Image (cartoon, rainbow, N blue to C red):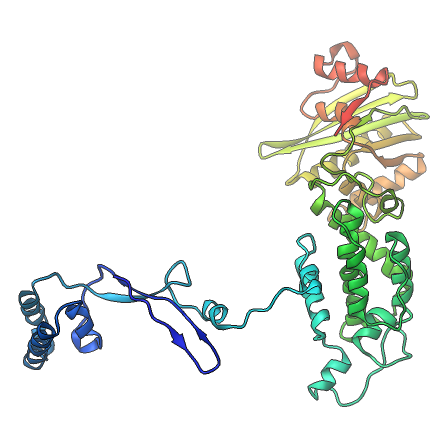
Length: 457
């Protein structure tokens, strides 16, 4: 059974549907229920209702004690001639029927149309924390000194900790500060945004970027989202100086480098969307990584490059059953020198990649080789070699790098397609003669030797 009603107030008149739904829950004690007339009267004639109400009233006075509840229930069933059950309210605004203040607020609040700025503020490819941060900017509710003064939380005006020249405010900090201005000019030039006068406010700056943005290229995605990313990094620098442990004011160049590092990782979040135009300037300015690719881009032919002296290709494979490393060394003519496969003790993929590079390089140096080049297709493993203080492999990496520097060993990244031979060696044994290599390995070796490319999509 369903019953529709409405909630009204002086300021609004909006229908809110409520449903009474029949359930099979056991009947509660009538002394605790205030709805017993509605439970049994239903849609019957007024005269019949009067008789039933009289019966219920008399019985309730007669059997008011707890010990007579079962007798009262039985008598009511005999009088009313239908099976009793309990009704409960179901809130139709929620799927589970339970009332929530959120759904009630959505029903009674005054709806407003979506504005241009708030539509672009919640761009689907922007990170969640920056979306919320942009919303705070557009509502002017960041906890800067000028906003805190409005709530009488800060009594004295504060100087901007970035430039120490003007009063601290949101527009100054994120747009007009002498540290922020070179950053905006630099990225406006890259994205082709007309220079905006610094007499404008931050909202006008955001709208100017969004008006220039389309939807067909990665550059358009940067025009949508880069203003929020820039403001986010400026805010982090401001917070570190004001409330954190930072003592030195970061330069504009330092913040630009941090923004580029962020966008390179952020770019992978939309690497599978159907955009055909990447924008070479984004790659040239290192806003997106070199190996960035999109669905629908033109395939490239990747082949193994011959070295000037010797080249050692390494790779690793990892599975719950175990980890294995593969390595092959060739000379400047691409001729086979040695190849081997070896087990690794690793708990995850990155550890296997790093251990494979360390063991392969150490093995080659112990065998008497020097002035050779080590290639791996793992950018993460190569990053630990460039900055060896990170991770728990700090000591073995530093020891290996000291010996590698003395023997003229260099490290570089290569594409996975050009490192396929080392990958196929990951679960094999040691070989000294090319004829002993399995057929798939030997075919990959011949492709590398004669410069036959592989297709990279």
